[in-house]
Length: 434
Image (cartoon, rainbow, N blue to C red):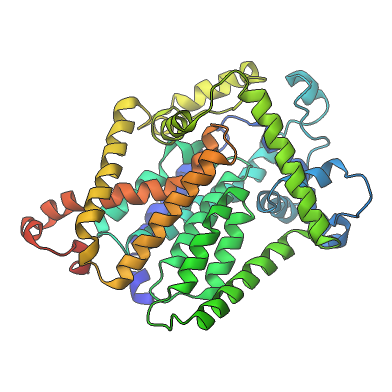
């Protein structure tokens, strides 16, 4: 491990340089009202330190406004914000954002964070991005040569969707980190059950979308290399994996401590109701079918410019900041029909490369590619159908996998550049390039 870190140490310099860039533009990122909500409920971190049981749901009592958010949202984003506030002793917001009020009304009520509070709230989510890049690179490097892995890592780290959505005081940065960390755990040569269970817990407790990766975790712990695949052993590994995931998730959610079954059911009901309301508000008059859902996913993932807001309530107030933000080239690069089509073409080409080379890989490499393929498939399914609302930031968990398959599709080009003779070989570059 030490030799690998030393050999690939340049990725840490790249990530550090990118972090400086992220920090430079952190306050240029257009404000999203959900950031106010996350800052408001970050008080949970302080309550956990003082009296964690005060966050638990009490059966038969009416939910407080903060209880509703505990039932609806995964907790890690508000904990990250609360931790930063706790360290520097920064007070939070006096009020939550009120979507039914206008911009000036929310300002008057104290729901808009000051620049210093906004920087504080965005700092730890932004800090997670370089770590996500490093985990992604070390995952990719096990499967593809160095040059495509570096290109894929830069594609992820400088992706305009990451620069916008993951530098906010919201869930997307923790989700990106959780997904890349989880993918790193399941592509190790030797699977470590505690790491896989913990990585999945981090992803799911960042945002519920990552629950799509649960079957991948189960398959990963069942198909451990150089281990017995007897049913009893596999069930034992799945049980340990599930216990680590469940215990970690339970500890991160004090809302469930007092009455876990009732609280989980209540969370499901509240989440379903919210999705129904969003669908009624934003999909009214639109014909939703598989074709339109796939089109919106592809459009949001590769083509559309970064979208600073999903609804138009406050676009007039945020327009000047959005205009300043998008005047900077890295915040918009690669987001066009031509560039997106090129990315899609390379990724589709990776399917052909995988088909031609898969049978020549050893069993370890086949297992890792299978797990990444299943991760891609399951995330696509959950993003398409749960919920069927084509908001751009919902595609964030797919970005690391899109970046990987883009890098994988570049393997033939890498082969022709590094050594033209390798194009005649019947086995992949990754098996001969160390």
